[in-house]
Image (cartoon, rainbow, N blue to C red; front, side, top):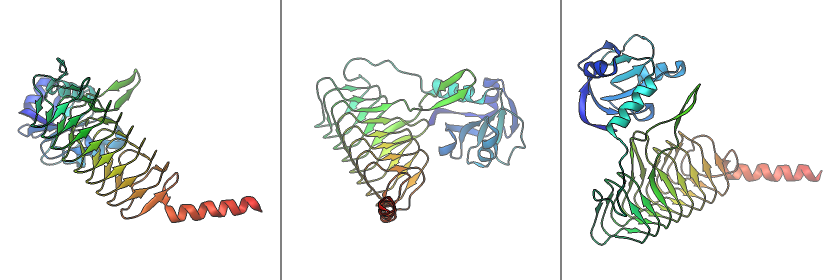
Length: 304
């Protein structure tokens, strides 16, 4: 998530009443959780398992709850509750906006596009040329649709991500500071849901087609010309390559990478990253030929 107005680490230290270690002149140009950090980004860490990952990441400024040796060309801002500070910065940068009417006045709709009765287009949404938004669909805040995109009836594009911080008090909701991008020629079936990125852009690649009731989690990257049948579910921050085919009720866990031209057969469950150019089946998913051989062996054992 890019900041509208960059701020130095020293300025942010004063704003948060933090303790600064490292270079206070570093400029914070974005806010990102650890999966998507780039140079210039601020991130946070408050759990021992991830201290090393955060300190070794590309992030320039890190909110942290204890003093650690500061790596070169970084700044550490020591605060008691890094998550609350991080989430507060996101909420200040991207406050929730009230919606007005069917099509918010701040939304943009291109030539030849139309919005069916009951559909809603939220603040700052950008809809390209020749798009079709069918009845009762919702295009959320800041969502971008390139040209020729079709949104099925009842689909919701750009809702908050399903992402929470566990505390002793319960689960705290993260503010989703990212967005959604549907590239040219994407078609979304009825009653699908595509979550906004927590800190980046959930992206559906050019020409990809989704059947009804497909769920795409926050910060996912779906490649070009993919096909996903009904009730496919992809958890947050997973990357899918180009020309992939997922049959009905395929489930894919979070933080995985699925290679180009992967085929996953119906009702399979994917719990680890998959090499492209192969066909998979089962739970946990494995190469289909191996899975079918295993099933045949089990059937023979049952007959004995």
